[in-house]
Image 1: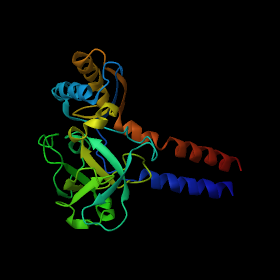
Image 2 (image 1 turned 180 degrees about the vertical axis):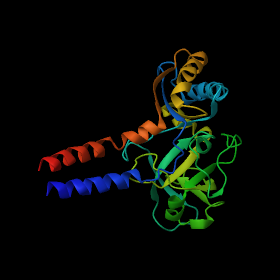
Image 3 (image 1 turned 120 degrees about the vertical axis):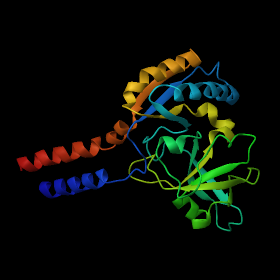
Image 4 (image 1 turned 30 degrees about the horizontal axis):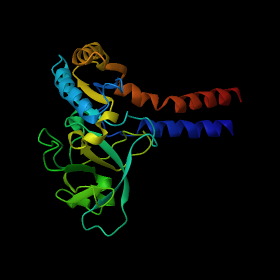
Length: 260
């Protein structure tokens, strides 16, 4: 029986390793920031800090792109943000979807290429047209399917503004390795109400992500000495950490099986 269970766990581990996250995980650093609430007590102040910081990081040698994002990757299916979305003309009840607020270079940084339409750019500002990007599964749940680009959606109640879908992207496993959550993406520049809650950045580098971290720390301090790097990790390591428990279980069962 122990050998049988060990075999099942081993096959489960193999299946887990075969999962495609939908992300280009190599050469990406995940940076967690921290700042004092007394100084950054409004979204406007945090937004101004990011306006100074992001160009400084992108200008560092070996850095090709950088973007803030509202959720640390692979922190669990319950750790992300969910929102109730409706599509213009949709008769069905609102769809509960993963809700990602991201910087303009998010898709470039994580290697997510649009299936149709475009990704965000510098024109998607607060004073610009309200836009959104949806994953393929989110497009289906909103009744848009392959014709999603150009359709309008909105978050929550009738008072929320309509947003035009400008792109459709593949599913990713950013929240949790075992499931791809259907996602609506909104540019952080158009959602200033939550920017003070966004403390995570993803940074694409030419070489090893860890080699760029000291320069990123310096750039943060130079931007504002009250902002600190709370943590830094390679995206590859965060993905690998998802397999730790399964590997340990497989090893223990293999040892018990050998003993039996």
